[in-house]
Amino acid sequence: MDLHVWSRKGRLHALLLALLLSGASATRVANNLRTSAQSIKDELNQLSSFDLRNKYHALDGVATSTQRAGSNPQGRFNDDDEDEDEDMDDKSFLLLGASSDIGKGGSDDNGKDFCLKNKYRKRTFKVVKEMPFSGLFPELKRTRRFEGSGIAYAKGSYWVVFDSLRSLGQVDLRFSFRGPFNKLVGPVGEESQFEGISYDNVTDTFFVLRESMEHEEHGLVPLTEELRLTEGGNNYEVLGRCIVPFALQDVNKGFESLVVFWRDGKRHMLGLCESNFCKTVLGPDPPGLQRGNGRLVWATYHAPEDEYDECRWDVQKVIHLPSDAYLLDYSAISFRGEFGADVAVVSQEDAAVWVGSFDWKEMEFVDTNSDGTRMGRIYHFPRTSECRKQYCNVEGVAWIDEDRLVVTSDKSKRTQDFRCMEKDQSLHIIALP
Image (tube, rainbow, N blue to C red; front, top):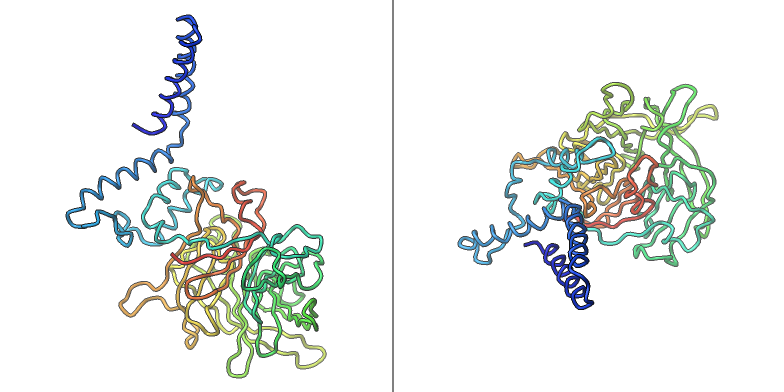
């Protein structure tokens, strides 16, 4: 019998004993027992089917483990075995998780199935440490909104940009509460629309990305700003603003992340499109919502030739993400080390990260291993005890080492589930499972 039932039987026995000792009439005893029994029945009916299923799942696991004891001397499951999930690939598992998004017409039952899969254990990040931005900085500069969007490592710290601020966030490697080396650099200002940040170690400058702006000649295009820290590192100066003449269709679905690098004596950048195909997410059957069609734009810096010219990033190639990066959107990209092969791509909508490989010589993603198996894998952020999404606003990402990542979260939206509030406007350190 379930432990919940045993505890409630104890309550009935205690009530009966108290009534008898008080000398209550038989009618009063019967009425009190009837009322208490109905209350307990209602409590049992309200128990989450998910909780009960977890208990039965655990009991079933013990029984199954015992049955296997002949072939497994320890009588335990091997967590590396796929069990019933062996035919479910990363795409199917991702879609199962997406189908549980209640806010988008999903089913709660699908969420329970998602978390009870053995694959959930094998594909879910372990949270190492996390903290709201409001707890990281000793001085908040009278602001309470920290819409974390992009993050990059430079000069011994992690640097964060915020959609809501013009300040840069400098965070030391200890990620400590009100850390003495953590600070907001530059004025808070108005909303910046900064979505990404990258450090240029040749010029000792930062490039920050605005996902879109209206240009007289080229229409709706992404824009970068080059920043240099002032002496003492408490402020910065803007050295220039350069467009990427790459036509966008939606004002809120432009470039979400950038990586600046040098090759053959020239400065280059990679810009990650937020939507699939870099196309619109509006209208009937929009191409921007067709999963697995991520795009990374490679562009080369062009300096002004005279006082009448303007700097720009000339597009060299539109690089296709592998189809197994089967994501609904793309909010950030990070390579592990300069020209490192390991690459991570974050999806805010899916609360997931695709981890794969990149060939810098060919400027292409690597689709398969030498044995023909798919190179990339999709990992998921942990869910609540009810298997609901809680990391709903993940945006920026940077590698710490080969096993760990640091991620930033934007502010939760009014249209989102209230559970999204707990993890928003924060910095998270996560480990690969």
